[in-house]
Length: 461
Image (cartoon, rainbow, N blue to C red):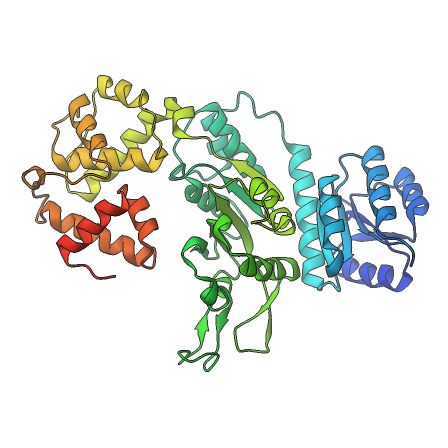
């Protein structure tokens, strides 16, 4: 198979020559054009796989020529990926280009890794799209033959469509934005992307951006060196460094403050960063997956989220359906959670009645899969008999955010219910770095109920 042919379009011969040298060393064939008409002529006679196009072809242009060429390429070869090149101060032009159908954008001056990664990703996505058949009618078994779906539960057609898309983009390095209500399983899907990617042997690092104050953002994400600030007594590795060679999940990306958004955009765009207090520039080799329960397009319109950052994050956008939209998956999820509870609490095989399953399928589940998981665990811990019936599940669901009666908390194995609950809270506090909102959400409690438990168990935060 011949090397993919990349067309570079720039009126500066030195730029075309530099790109040709870089791309040929990476195994690509190249052809150059200095303007729109020359580029279109090349496209009409050669099997170009990717276009790397500057936005300016003359000193007088404001980028409109670049947008016009993009439109003409899209009309001639709508499936052909186009990467735009523009100066940092003209990123608004690149965003306009993304809206018009460009695959991605690169800022000048570029880094070699930035160009090569964008090219690999665009070509990979184009290949995945050309291989993809219609998702309609795809089965869980078919997906399981080509994907590792351990821990991903569901057979609803819409959910399988999500898995099919993730399976096609996982082999690439494309950034993915996962949207959906709280508790729908966005973190599980992010882990599945990592597990089905060439980076699976590398680390999978999760960052809850909602719990990172603006003042600590640089230290948390990029790390710091000793003496960088008053309390920096030793060097500290940041989250991006910890994720090198793997995948980073930027959870709750919609909570990022404006100043931090600028810094995040810079590192994702340039693929380089410096630890706080250091002058050493480090290259970023990380696949980025972001997740949010917010409407980021609305946040852009309201001026709360940068549009250029949104386009940098969502080369691929995936929306996870709410649990109420996939009631057919509830029996699968319940049995999965029952097996987990039996293992965690030292119980024998656990079951649930068909009446209880039908009742659960009629519930609204505002907390989605996470709420269902906690309801099942509560029903098991409160002792509802085997198989579990409707009443134990009803009691467990009604306890969301409420204090259970002390005489309802039986001993489980060698631990009492209080001891188990305290242990769960302590582990969640450690996992979420003391963010009480996230702790309450992960445990299926209201903040008020969490505060009461912290006081009861003498837990200080």
